Image (cartoon, rainbow, N blue to C red; front, side, top):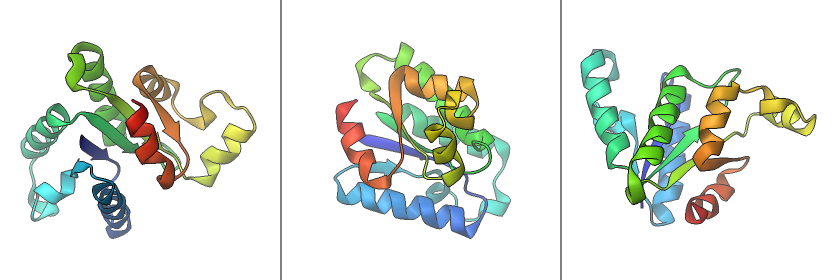
Length: 148
């Protein structure tokens, strides 16, 4: 199964977290498309390059894994979630669905308090839930992907 790994990639810490996630998923037998791996120098990329490479990555993937942590879901990640949800809805059997991961304690506390959407934008949460699920630990991702 080919995965598109979505998440913020603007700091070394964010890219390192996504790299570690992709490495773990690769050991589980998944083929991972990680957007920043396709650009040698992130500071020099154009919006046209990012849109082309990432859209091709989304279209070639069977499933999306989206990292949701932070005070708000990263806007690029939210866009990727929306685009992939539509691919699942219209793309036939090639597209399996979305597994999103939220390890942020702020989201976990809101979820435990039964806050609708757990503090997440309801449209983004709805796009995820329309064709997948939200998990709260890295160790849950592979099992959730196999259930799609």
